[in-house]
Amino acid sequence: MTTRFLRLTLIIAALMTALGSWIFLAPDSGLAQQYDLPADVPVLYRALVSFMLTVFAGLYAWMAAQARLLRPLLWLGVFGKGGAFVMVLALFATDQISTGVVSLMIGDGVLSTIWLVWLLRTREAASAGS
Image (cartoon, rainbow, N blue to C red; front, side):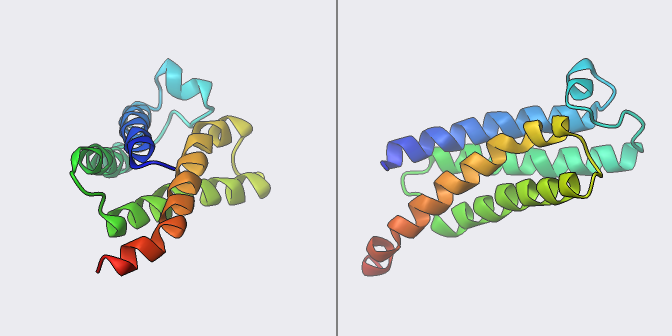
């Protein structure tokens, strides 16, 4: 897996996460309703979730633009996106959310898996360069 491909996934992650930020900020929008998100969410929770997603979107965009990929930040992305996906699967398994929400988060599961594979495959090269 090339570094160029990984940068492309970071750009995709930035765009997806920015869109997610808007969806969670406006849960009564048509797009949010397509994913079965609850429309009556207190503004504090909407604002905080949207802010955190915006921070992650900025992080992914910034990482894609760096000359050298920063492995610790990519690990943060693995845990952030992967953790969110696992949490949604657990909520789905306990009938707390619908398949619409799961479909919203599938990209997070895919991206975190790609990043995890890249990090594990390149760990020997990274430790040799230290």
